[in-house]
Image (tube, rainbow, N blue to C red; front, side):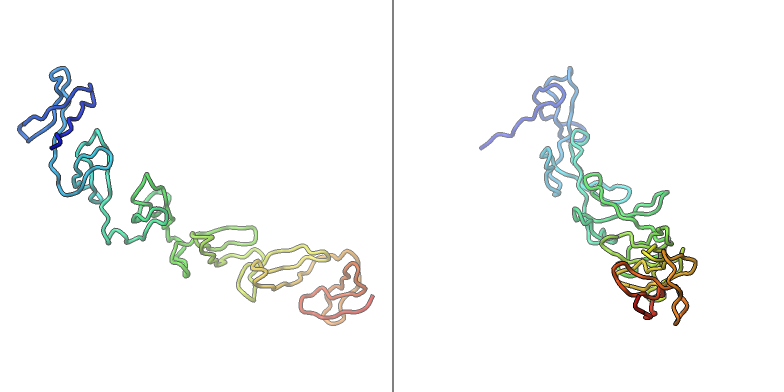
Length: 244
C-alpha cells in the first residue's frame, strides 16, 4: 500500500503536516511558529482535480456566471468556465469554440470570447447602421471618394454592400456608385461594380486630344484610336463609325 505523498511548504520548503482545526482539516508547516503557512484541505466535491496542482476543484458563483476554481487559491489561480447550452446565445467562438458574450463599451457593443484572456477574439455587435441581410452581422458606414456605403463587418467573408450617398451619381443598372474615369480620349462615368456591371456614360465638358468633329447621329465628339483607321463616336451606346 503506497503512502500519501507529503507536500512541501511553498514558503520555506519544510514538510507540511495534517492538523485539525475549528473548520476541519488543514495542512500546516512543520516549521511552525517560524513559518505560519497553512492550506485548507478540501474533500473531493465531484468537480474533478485541478490540472495545474492536483487540488480538488470547487464551484464558484461569479457576478455573471458560475465557474470552477482551484481550492488552493491564491497559490493556484486556475479557473474553468462551466458551459451550458444557454451560454451559446451569441454563438460560438470561431477560434476556440467557447461561447461568445455581449460586451457593452463606450465605443459600441461587441462580442468577446468567454475564454479571455487565453482567447482574444472579438466581433463588432453595434447595429447602429442595421443588420446585414446576407449573414445577420452589423453593418458599418464607409466613406470613399466616390460616395458612402454600408458594408458588412464580416468582410471579406461577407461582401454585402449598399450605397447610400453618391459623389457622381447612382448606376442605373445595378444601383452602385458611379466613378469618374479619365480615358485615353475623354472623361466618362463608369460603374464601381465593374466587371460585374459594365455601365458607362460619357460626360460633357471634356476635350479630346484632337478635334475630329461631332457625331452626326447624336452630336457627341468623335475620337480616333491609335493604329485604327476609323473614327468612333465617344458616346456609350452610339455605334457611329467611319473610315479615316
